[in-house]
Image 1 (cartoon, rainbow, N blue to C red):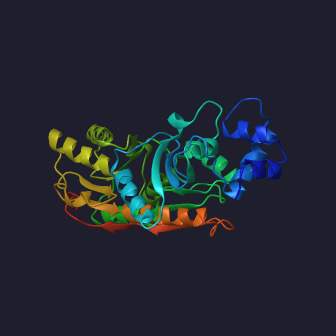
Image 2 (cartoon, rainbow, N blue to C red):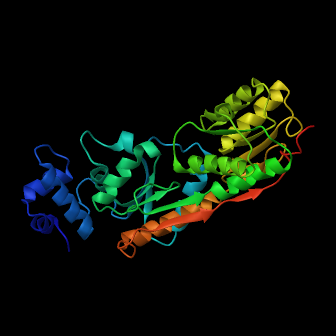
Image 3 (cartoon, helix red, strand yellow):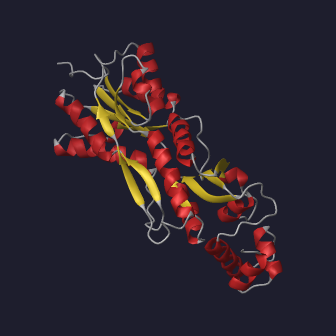
Length: 333
């Protein structure tokens, strides 16, 4: 059984140094800290003090939690399904709030009693994910595709389906097509924007910067997209909204200002679940199975924790698809 004495011996430091590292105490060099954390993660040791369980896994937000979004609600549902049959409990942590001053993310996770982490990140906060993996902690990035090839990740590839969605609008005769995308940079929304540009370039349809509208990924963001569209001359006849709640806000604002969907404005949204069937008109949308994504992510993390997938990082993409419903129509002559 691994104990603090074995960690000290493997790291080549004193027992008191190991204790200071595990308790985030000052007066430890970076070299000693790294040696201790490497030994801890190599052996799978979890300190007894200050923890309530050794079987926790954590869903960690590296740039602020977004639990009110349809994506995260469905993701958590899937994560729980993937943990069924194991003895793992789920913690939900915000790295910005949960970490103590000068504490690494790995130290925070060990203090919380987590044996592995599902990381929700953005482009700006990827460095935190890289630190966790560099320290040898079991982790999987979920819902985005990080640049570092050493990171395990599982995500939905929305670029081909996004291209198909914009090609659908072009096939209906739309030439001036806007896109509403998240103001925060991440790989998912970058893929959807790339699919938009792919479709337009293939048909040699010119676009402009004003047609790429960045807004918050919520109802208020959808309202802002429609307001921007309403103020353009000439006005776009179609829009692709890359977030579910954006589409909700856009439909509400279009009704408020008298823009008819789809007669005046064809609208394609993005759906993480079954939202497209609940809106009026039923939403033409690029879709992903977020529950299945969460389940696959937690199953992969359990493999990583069991050290069955430590030798080679796994980067897995799940397919998105495009569904046509009632919110798109031919462009008006």
